[in-house]
Length: 103
Length: 209
Image (cartoon, rainbow over all chains, first blue to last red; front, side, top):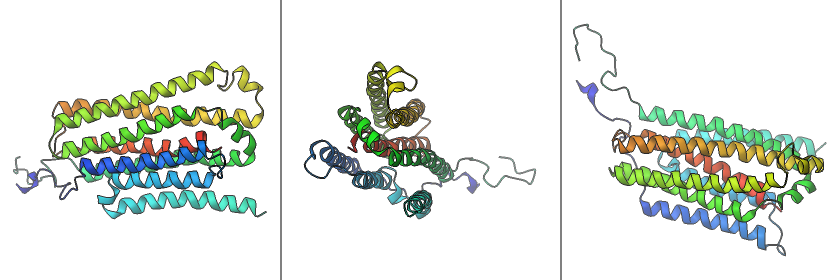
């Protein structure tokens, strides 16, 4: 009975190495440090604007999703679905804001 | 498996579908993103309407505690990702150990959050308390949103911690192994989502001065 094939759902899984995980963490910590330093010590620089903070946060989120959540090694459908959700959210938010501020 | 009836379910013999389980988790995570997305929109709109008040109130939050908690969550995200690597390589003991570290870090996060909240509550900043009621509208709203959003996030941390406990138990029992580790993956995905939400909460509440 060939139906008894054990596990067919991991045909060729990518196994991230511990080393990869450490580098991902280092990247995330670095980005966190940048945000905090700009915010706390950047009094004479331009203070951390909402846009900068959200930009850095978004880069961090992409790093987490891409490497820790394995999006890089998953089927493309996961990335497309995620993009769909994010774009829907952004389109709604940004269009509403533009509409409001252009009155 | 008898074939005498002439009818056999197409997949009889195993009723697992790891790919679909993971897809199910991702779909659930999308609904979570939209849930928090809604809260972020509320935050955004009221921040635009009460710009000065939000700015002023954000100085009340403890940046050190917020930063430490960010680091705690990032490290825990790495340990949970490592536990998947470990189980894929067939090292159950290491996987359980890494999950236990993650669980420990989630508790560290909650303890720090507890001290943060206690300090605010001690000052009477919790919605309904004296100082809160005496605050101008915009500032009390900042603290209202702070408690709602970090509170909902903390609830997710608690759920994640419970999930982590179940995964550790099943890993130690041998129910999870290099051939069947979807629970570890899904726990990991959920835990990363909790981290993702915090990545946005932290700058929005603590840092934007």
